[in-house]
Amino acid sequence: MRSKLWLIAGIALVSAGALLAASQPWVSLELAPGAAAFEVLVVTGQQVNATLTAIALAGFAAALALTIAGSGFRRVLGVLVVLFGAGIAAIAISVLIDPWGAASGRLAEATGIAGDAQLEMVERSSSSPFIVLALACGALLALLGALVAVLGGRWGAAGRKYAAREDRGVRDAAAREDDAPDRFSDWDRLSEGGDPTASD
Image 1 (cartoon, helix red, strand yellow):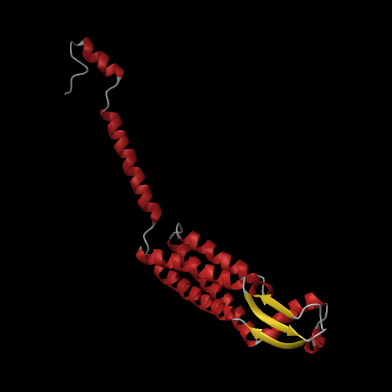
Image 2 (image 1 turned 90 degrees about the vertical axis):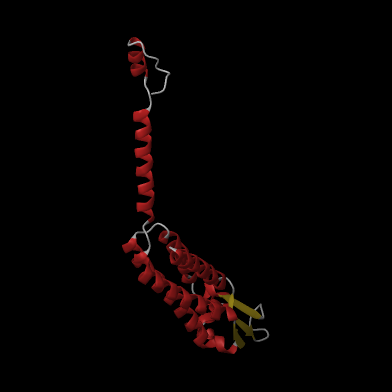
């Protein structure tokens, strides 16, 4: 059960890290003087690839689902978390390899110029450390998902524990109800000359 808490918390925290990285600048493009109305174009991870935020939020959802999932479904969620992490890492790697290509779409939206004409507009491009953070979060998320897929089947089922407690509570209440006196039995004892308020 301790591994369950650590893994679920880890998935939630790493997903939060990926969500933070996606909202930060990933690529900066310095434009030539007079090329556009602005000198620097900053592109965030979310603008590079809109699925980053959705994948990070899906990691949160998987962490919540793991708190109540059964043994088989936990393994499925573990595989999904591996895929989420692999997706985040793949996006980060593609931007690290070709930051210019990752930002070209955003530059086309901002200036209306696409293709080879953009090469004359941009003097320099730079990458942000948040790309590395996203890559690390993706790799760690994939590792945590793999651990869930392997260890998830050994976690105790919370549903059975709570059901057992509920059944025990129902049995105790029924026993108390059987032992409790009622008006009819009290009247019978009084008619026989006994005292219904006296304990046995």
